[in-house]
Length: 505
Image 1 (cartoon, rainbow, N blue to C red):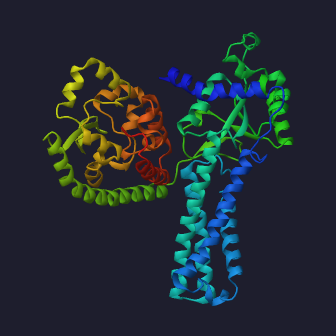
Image 2 (cartoon, rainbow, N blue to C red):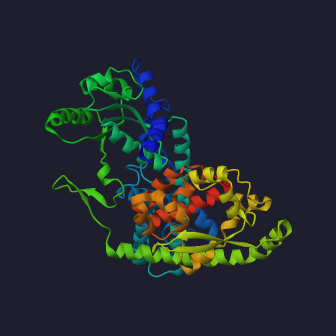
Image 3 (tube, one colour):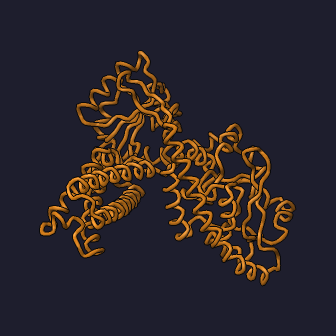
């Protein structure tokens, strides 16, 4: 699995980087999108989006109750209220670091910081209002509405900014020009971690490997052209004008002096340096200890994990109730449709492997002919194609109504019964059948340690368009980084994929 993964990632990321190096080698590199660096543009868009979103809040509250939310003190001076609201919210966002690395933060981390920042700000506003004006119900309601409206608008603004930046990245704009220092295997690990997250914000323009032999450099092969001699590092930096340098090498005596020289150059020319270590990939809670200078891994507190577990269970039960009620309404309609086409049962029992390694089942609306499993086992060609992804794009066994049900994911609605009973979670790693266990090898125990979900990371990041190896890596990514914030992002993306009908067949 690893070799095919490295090759697919190299074609997707390294080859464009090699072409970029060859294009820019003679003429220098200049960023074309308003001549702004990628990180500066992302921060500017995030800041501008927040300003516009917060500017709407006072007007929205005024429309709601036809009285200015802070009419006690600011009835005749709405501009002052607006400046206080916007400045305070923007300031607290800055203190929480929401603008510092906005362009490289994962969506769930950004959601967490924005919610905590604005929540803290409006708690301060509420406390201040209570001290200044006493207990006034109308004021309390306005503050509560202001909090919800500001949070919703800022999150929408951040989502729009992310869509704009992602579209720019796909066109090769607003990316951070980067130079990677490390071995070919380290570069492959780094690029794989970006590929799993569909992150295109870093454009690796060149790679410098201190361990690459001179003979390899002169071979002229397509792969060796991406790794340049460390003797020429100053020329490479001057030609490519990188925005950041990603380092993944050991601090041996041969590299210590050279790395010190590179870091000193980056410090003087204001080039960001990022240390990438595959040892910490997938480890949550890693941070630097400023006293020792070492990376530490600290588990989240028990209170945090307990609170997130309670929130997830409550969310599952609420979604399970709503989804189950919707399913009960759909059953008579689906039953009539299936009876008209082939007269078979309305449900299909889908098997999956549980945490106890035993086979369990959940219900789905039937979308295939009644002897679908038998037909698959009897058709060698069909079975071979199915073994590749455990899905068939043009499956001859699917009914006409079944294609419609799959297109809009209606066939999965009965799974809400399992979410309601607690055997499945709404968000989690994908369920696997008995025949898929061997595809996970040593990762099987890790996969089964988390309750499987009706939707998950791989469904919203590519669904059926992903290869099986990519699904495995995405399941592992979710397990390594799972949190209530990531679940909320996946839920939001699930609804967008549902309406876009993306990747369903």
